[in-house]
Amino acid sequence: MFTVVLDRQPADDEIDTLFTIGCDDATFGTEANLPVVEFDREAETMADAIASAVHHLDRAGLAAIRVLDQDLVTLADVAERFGQSRESVRRYTTGDRGPGNLPPPVNPAPDGTVFYRWSEVAPWARTHLKIQVPDVDPALVVANLVLQARQHFTRCRTSRP
Image: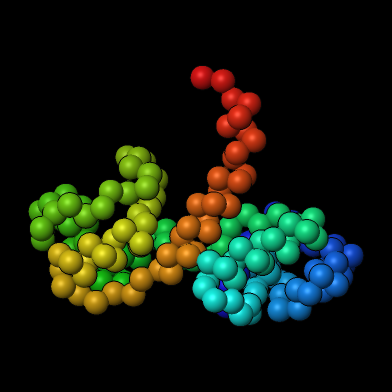
């Protein structure tokens, strides 16, 4: 199962189109005030399941914005997943504790909340701290990168330096 965030709430005729083209494994709703569709899709791989679901959404005139995952995390999230204090984890980022080289944040800004990619932090924790932490399914991470690229592709072709 996986959940896709849509660009907008689907109209009834779009939902009907999905069911007509064989997409009977979709459940529509909202999560955190965002329009979502949850798929219970069988496929050989998670990547295949996501790709076919996005294809069905495209055919119905709906745009997939992202797939919900747990990849973007704060230091507080990392601390919780490590079973350690936030300060302990913060010290990994500065090299004051542990082996150093914690993967860098996605947005290394001095102001505001800083986010890390769990898909980078989890392998680091297993290798350097010898703690077992769960992975994010890499198919979800790749799907989000592809969906993000799709959204920006046209703008890249027309932007000037």
